[in-house]
Image (cartoon, rainbow, N blue to C red):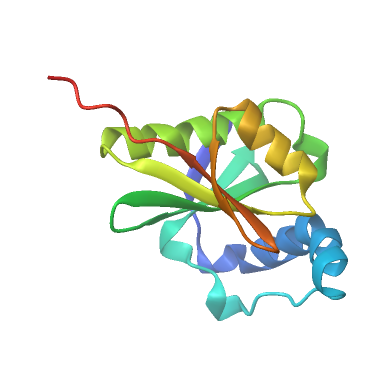
Length: 145
């Protein structure tokens, strides 16, 4: 059974380890090094742990913005990638944004071509780019009169 549950302080080790596992290569390719997040930098209030069969398999961080929701992180343990779990988590974030009448926005490091391709396949549209990141959006639902 798959469960999305609120993060707890006891999850910090998992959050740190998974961030390193999925982001280190991309950070090194852009900046020449990976600087892990401090435990205090993890936003446990907006973080949900994705469990498969009772084991942590990933996490999702969605933060409120003034006129949108920001998908800050969608990380999956590599063994669970490519099996539809990311699509399910993204759909949950999109549903949350849609229910609030808001756009869903995110950014992807340029070096993470696999993530960029995933988000574009799922209908995210480019907003703008910087030297390091590509910013994407799934628009707010159209107002129905």
